[in-house]
View 1 (cartoon, rainbow, N blue to C red):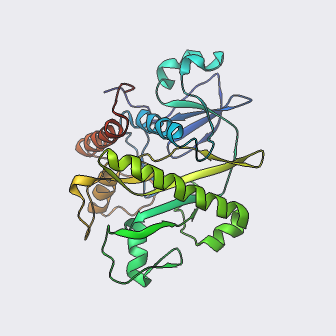
View 2: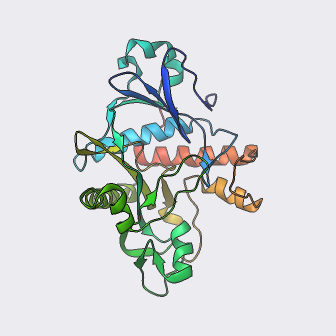
Length: 298
Protein backbone atom coordinates (compact mmCIF):
# COMPACT_ATOMS: atom_id res chain seq x y z
CA UNK A 1 0.00 0.00 0.00
CA UNK A 2 1.34 3.44 -0.95
CA UNK A 3 1.43 6.45 1.35
CA UNK A 4 -1.86 8.31 1.16
CA UNK A 5 -2.08 11.70 -0.57
CA UNK A 6 -4.49 13.93 1.36
CA UNK A 7 -3.70 17.07 -0.61
CA UNK A 8 -1.14 18.16 -3.16
CA UNK A 9 1.23 21.11 -3.02
CA UNK A 10 2.84 21.46 -6.42
CA UNK A 11 4.60 24.77 -5.83
CA UNK A 12 5.70 25.37 -9.41
CA UNK A 13 2.12 25.04 -10.66
CA UNK A 14 -0.89 27.30 -10.18
CA UNK A 15 -3.70 25.69 -8.21
CA UNK A 16 -7.13 27.07 -9.05
CA UNK A 17 -9.47 24.79 -7.14
CA UNK A 18 -9.44 22.22 -4.37
CA UNK A 19 -12.62 20.16 -4.56
CA UNK A 20 -13.91 17.40 -2.31
CA UNK A 21 -11.46 14.95 -3.88
CA UNK A 22 -9.58 16.66 -6.72
CA UNK A 23 -6.92 19.36 -6.77
CA UNK A 24 -6.98 21.27 -10.07
CA UNK A 25 -4.03 23.21 -11.51
CA UNK A 26 -4.06 25.65 -14.44
CA UNK A 27 -1.40 24.81 -17.05
CA UNK A 28 -2.45 27.53 -19.46
CA UNK A 29 -4.01 25.73 -22.41
CA UNK A 30 -5.29 22.83 -20.26
CA UNK A 31 -5.88 21.77 -16.67
CA UNK A 32 -4.09 19.22 -14.49
CA UNK A 33 -6.60 17.28 -12.43
CA UNK A 34 -5.15 15.33 -9.50
CA UNK A 35 -7.33 12.86 -7.60
CA UNK A 36 -6.26 12.81 -3.95
CA UNK A 37 -7.17 10.15 -1.40
CA UNK A 38 -9.63 12.45 0.37
CA UNK A 39 -13.06 10.96 1.01
CA UNK A 40 -16.28 12.90 1.27
CA UNK A 41 -19.37 11.40 2.87
CA UNK A 42 -22.67 13.23 3.30
CA UNK A 43 -20.90 16.12 1.52
CA UNK A 44 -18.35 16.42 4.33
CA UNK A 45 -14.64 15.77 3.72
CA UNK A 46 -13.33 13.25 6.23
CA UNK A 47 -10.02 14.03 8.01
CA UNK A 48 -8.58 10.60 7.15
CA UNK A 49 -7.64 9.64 3.57
CA UNK A 50 -8.25 6.24 1.99
CA UNK A 51 -4.85 5.13 0.60
CA UNK A 52 -4.79 4.68 -3.21
CA UNK A 53 -8.37 5.89 -3.60
CA UNK A 54 -7.37 8.69 -5.97
CA UNK A 55 -5.48 6.26 -8.19
CA UNK A 56 -8.47 3.91 -8.27
CA UNK A 57 -10.88 6.70 -9.23
CA UNK A 58 -8.53 7.92 -11.97
CA UNK A 59 -7.91 4.47 -13.45
CA UNK A 60 -11.63 3.65 -13.45
CA UNK A 61 -12.51 6.97 -15.07
CA UNK A 62 -9.94 6.40 -17.83
CA UNK A 63 -11.33 2.88 -18.32
CA UNK A 64 -14.87 4.24 -18.78
CA UNK A 65 -13.89 7.30 -20.81
CA UNK A 66 -12.39 4.95 -23.39
CA UNK A 67 -15.41 2.64 -23.44
CA UNK A 68 -18.06 5.33 -23.84
CA UNK A 69 -16.25 7.72 -26.17
CA UNK A 70 -18.64 6.62 -28.93
CA UNK A 71 -21.54 8.07 -26.93
CA UNK A 72 -20.12 11.43 -25.86
CA UNK A 73 -16.74 13.22 -26.08
CA UNK A 74 -14.89 13.72 -22.81
CA UNK A 75 -12.31 16.15 -21.42
CA UNK A 76 -9.38 13.70 -21.15
CA UNK A 77 -6.23 14.71 -23.05
CA UNK A 78 -3.49 12.57 -21.47
CA UNK A 79 -2.98 10.34 -18.42
CA UNK A 80 0.65 9.28 -18.94
CA UNK A 81 2.68 11.58 -16.68
CA UNK A 82 5.77 11.15 -18.88
CA UNK A 83 3.86 12.95 -21.62
CA UNK A 84 2.80 15.85 -19.35
CA UNK A 85 4.41 19.31 -19.79
CA UNK A 86 7.95 19.81 -18.39
CA UNK A 87 6.62 21.77 -15.38
CA UNK A 88 4.88 18.60 -14.14
CA UNK A 89 7.87 16.27 -14.37
CA UNK A 90 9.31 17.15 -10.96
CA UNK A 91 6.11 15.77 -9.42
CA UNK A 92 6.01 12.41 -11.20
CA UNK A 93 5.95 10.43 -7.94
CA UNK A 94 2.84 12.28 -6.75
CA UNK A 95 1.05 12.42 -10.10
CA UNK A 96 1.63 8.88 -11.37
CA UNK A 97 -1.64 6.97 -11.68
CA UNK A 98 -3.79 9.67 -10.11
CA UNK A 99 -3.72 12.58 -12.55
CA UNK A 100 -5.07 13.59 -15.93
CA UNK A 101 -4.49 16.46 -18.30
CA UNK A 102 -7.94 17.68 -19.29
CA UNK A 103 -9.48 20.27 -21.58
CA UNK A 104 -10.75 23.54 -20.21
CA UNK A 105 -14.52 23.17 -20.19
CA UNK A 106 -17.30 25.38 -18.79
CA UNK A 107 -19.05 23.06 -16.27
CA UNK A 108 -22.84 22.91 -16.19
CA UNK A 109 -24.30 23.86 -12.77
CA UNK A 110 -26.16 20.56 -12.30
CA UNK A 111 -25.31 17.00 -11.35
CA UNK A 112 -26.80 14.48 -13.78
CA UNK A 113 -28.00 11.61 -11.60
CA UNK A 114 -29.35 8.36 -13.04
CA UNK A 115 -31.10 5.82 -10.80
CA UNK A 116 -31.70 2.27 -11.94
CA UNK A 117 -32.56 1.01 -8.45
CA UNK A 118 -34.32 2.70 -5.56
CA UNK A 119 -31.88 3.52 -2.79
CA UNK A 120 -30.43 6.36 -0.73
CA UNK A 121 -32.22 9.71 -0.99
CA UNK A 122 -34.44 8.25 -3.71
CA UNK A 123 -35.77 5.62 -1.32
CA UNK A 124 -36.39 8.24 1.37
CA UNK A 125 -38.28 10.42 -1.11
CA UNK A 126 -40.34 7.44 -2.31
CA UNK A 127 -41.30 6.57 1.25
CA UNK A 128 -42.59 10.11 1.78
CA UNK A 129 -44.79 10.54 -1.29
CA UNK A 130 -44.08 7.81 -3.88
CA UNK A 131 -42.01 10.19 -6.02
CA UNK A 132 -38.35 10.87 -6.83
CA UNK A 133 -37.51 14.34 -8.16
CA UNK A 134 -41.12 14.87 -9.15
CA UNK A 135 -41.42 11.50 -10.95
CA UNK A 136 -44.32 9.38 -9.63
CA UNK A 137 -43.48 5.71 -9.13
CA UNK A 138 -45.64 2.60 -8.67
CA UNK A 139 -46.89 1.60 -5.24
CA UNK A 140 -45.23 -1.25 -3.38
CA UNK A 141 -41.58 -0.86 -4.38
CA UNK A 142 -39.05 -2.26 -1.91
CA UNK A 143 -35.77 -0.67 -0.90
CA UNK A 144 -33.02 -1.48 -3.44
CA UNK A 145 -35.54 -2.83 -5.96
CA UNK A 146 -34.83 -2.37 -9.64
CA UNK A 147 -36.92 0.45 -11.08
CA UNK A 148 -39.21 -0.19 -14.06
CA UNK A 149 -36.78 1.93 -16.09
CA UNK A 150 -33.78 4.11 -15.22
CA UNK A 151 -34.69 7.62 -14.05
CA UNK A 152 -32.90 10.90 -14.73
CA UNK A 153 -33.03 12.75 -11.42
CA UNK A 154 -30.80 15.82 -11.50
CA UNK A 155 -29.53 17.81 -8.54
CA UNK A 156 -27.95 21.15 -7.86
CA UNK A 157 -24.17 21.41 -7.52
CA UNK A 158 -23.46 23.02 -4.15
CA UNK A 159 -20.25 24.28 -2.57
CA UNK A 160 -18.11 22.04 -0.32
CA UNK A 161 -19.88 21.40 2.97
CA UNK A 162 -23.31 22.10 1.47
CA UNK A 163 -25.68 19.32 0.43
CA UNK A 164 -26.66 18.98 -3.22
CA UNK A 165 -30.43 19.41 -3.65
CA UNK A 166 -32.52 17.04 -5.75
CA UNK A 167 -34.49 18.92 -8.41
CA UNK A 168 -36.93 17.97 -11.16
CA UNK A 169 -36.32 18.23 -14.89
CA UNK A 170 -38.07 21.60 -15.17
CA UNK A 171 -35.80 23.09 -12.53
CA UNK A 172 -32.76 21.66 -14.32
CA UNK A 173 -34.02 23.19 -17.58
CA UNK A 174 -34.32 26.57 -15.85
CA UNK A 175 -30.64 26.31 -14.82
CA UNK A 176 -29.08 25.16 -18.11
CA UNK A 177 -31.75 25.66 -20.76
CA UNK A 178 -34.29 23.13 -22.00
CA UNK A 179 -32.29 21.95 -25.01
CA UNK A 180 -29.12 21.27 -23.01
CA UNK A 181 -31.11 19.68 -20.18
CA UNK A 182 -32.71 17.30 -22.67
CA UNK A 183 -29.37 16.44 -24.24
CA UNK A 184 -27.60 15.69 -20.93
CA UNK A 185 -30.60 13.66 -19.80
CA UNK A 186 -30.43 11.49 -22.91
CA UNK A 187 -26.63 11.19 -22.72
CA UNK A 188 -26.75 10.29 -19.03
CA UNK A 189 -29.28 7.53 -19.64
CA UNK A 190 -27.26 6.18 -22.60
CA UNK A 191 -23.97 6.13 -20.65
CA UNK A 192 -25.67 4.51 -17.65
CA UNK A 193 -27.30 1.82 -19.81
CA UNK A 194 -23.99 0.89 -21.44
CA UNK A 195 -22.16 0.99 -18.09
CA UNK A 196 -24.75 -1.27 -16.48
CA UNK A 197 -24.35 -3.85 -19.25
CA UNK A 198 -20.55 -3.89 -18.99
CA UNK A 199 -20.51 -3.95 -15.18
CA UNK A 200 -23.08 -6.77 -15.06
CA UNK A 201 -20.67 -8.99 -17.01
CA UNK A 202 -18.09 -8.30 -14.28
CA UNK A 203 -20.45 -9.12 -11.40
CA UNK A 204 -21.36 -5.56 -10.42
CA UNK A 205 -24.75 -3.85 -10.28
CA UNK A 206 -24.55 -0.08 -10.81
CA UNK A 207 -27.55 0.98 -8.75
CA UNK A 208 -27.21 4.68 -9.48
CA UNK A 209 -24.58 7.17 -10.57
CA UNK A 210 -23.99 10.82 -11.30
CA UNK A 211 -22.32 12.47 -14.26
CA UNK A 212 -20.99 15.96 -14.82
CA UNK A 213 -20.99 17.70 -18.16
CA UNK A 214 -19.59 20.93 -19.52
CA UNK A 215 -19.58 22.98 -22.68
CA UNK A 216 -16.58 23.31 -25.00
CA UNK A 217 -17.27 25.47 -28.07
CA UNK A 218 -20.99 24.75 -27.60
CA UNK A 219 -20.36 20.99 -27.59
CA UNK A 220 -21.43 18.92 -24.58
CA UNK A 221 -18.45 17.14 -23.01
CA UNK A 222 -18.33 14.59 -20.18
CA UNK A 223 -16.04 15.80 -17.39
CA UNK A 224 -14.66 15.00 -13.93
CA UNK A 225 -15.08 11.28 -13.23
CA UNK A 226 -17.34 8.57 -14.58
CA UNK A 227 -18.86 5.41 -13.06
CA UNK A 228 -16.51 5.22 -10.07
CA UNK A 229 -17.28 4.05 -6.51
CA UNK A 230 -17.30 7.74 -5.51
CA UNK A 231 -19.92 8.78 -8.03
CA UNK A 232 -21.98 5.57 -8.04
CA UNK A 233 -23.46 2.82 -5.91
CA UNK A 234 -21.78 -0.47 -6.87
CA UNK A 235 -23.42 -3.63 -5.52
CA UNK A 236 -22.13 -7.23 -5.91
CA UNK A 237 -24.59 -9.15 -8.11
CA UNK A 238 -24.17 -12.37 -6.16
CA UNK A 239 -25.37 -10.76 -2.89
CA UNK A 240 -28.22 -8.71 -4.33
CA UNK A 241 -31.48 -9.10 -2.42
CA UNK A 242 -34.05 -6.28 -2.59
CA UNK A 243 -35.89 -5.34 0.57
CA UNK A 244 -33.15 -3.46 2.42
CA UNK A 245 -29.69 -1.90 2.06
CA UNK A 246 -27.14 -3.81 -0.05
CA UNK A 247 -23.47 -4.59 0.54
CA UNK A 248 -21.43 -2.35 -1.73
CA UNK A 249 -18.06 -1.61 -3.35
CA UNK A 250 -18.25 2.09 -2.58
CA UNK A 251 -18.01 4.38 0.45
CA UNK A 252 -21.17 2.95 2.00
CA UNK A 253 -18.87 1.35 4.61
CA UNK A 254 -17.96 4.87 5.75
CA UNK A 255 -21.54 6.11 5.54
CA UNK A 256 -22.70 3.19 7.70
CA UNK A 257 -20.03 3.93 10.31
CA UNK A 258 -20.99 7.62 10.38
CA UNK A 259 -24.64 6.69 10.78
CA UNK A 260 -23.77 4.32 13.64
CA UNK A 261 -22.10 7.16 15.58
CA UNK A 262 -24.97 9.53 14.73
CA UNK A 263 -22.74 11.92 12.79
CA UNK A 264 -24.60 15.22 12.27
CA UNK A 265 -23.53 15.50 8.60
CA UNK A 266 -21.81 18.84 9.19
CA UNK A 267 -18.08 19.67 9.12
CA UNK A 268 -15.73 18.75 10.59
CA UNK A 269 -15.89 15.02 9.91
CA UNK A 270 -14.83 12.59 12.66
CA UNK A 271 -11.65 10.54 12.63
CA UNK A 272 -12.21 7.12 11.06
CA UNK A 273 -11.15 3.87 12.75
CA UNK A 274 -8.31 2.02 11.01
CA UNK A 275 -10.64 -0.89 10.25
CA UNK A 276 -13.10 1.38 8.42
CA UNK A 277 -10.25 2.89 6.38
CA UNK A 278 -8.84 -0.54 5.51
CA UNK A 279 -12.21 -2.08 4.63
CA UNK A 280 -13.14 0.88 2.47
CA UNK A 281 -9.84 0.67 0.58
CA UNK A 282 -10.40 -3.07 0.02
CA UNK A 283 -13.83 -2.35 -1.49
CA UNK A 284 -12.40 0.24 -3.90
CA UNK A 285 -9.55 -2.09 -4.92
CA UNK A 286 -12.01 -4.95 -5.49
CA UNK A 287 -14.17 -2.75 -7.73
CA UNK A 288 -11.13 -1.72 -9.79
CA UNK A 289 -9.99 -5.32 -10.21
CA UNK A 290 -13.43 -6.64 -11.13
CA UNK A 291 -14.09 -3.95 -13.73
CA UNK A 292 -10.66 -3.51 -15.31
CA UNK A 293 -9.04 -6.86 -14.49
CA UNK A 294 -5.97 -5.10 -13.12
CA UNK A 295 -4.60 -3.23 -10.13
CA UNK A 296 -1.15 -2.61 -11.64
CA UNK A 297 -1.42 1.16 -11.22
CA UNK A 298 -1.60 0.89 -7.41
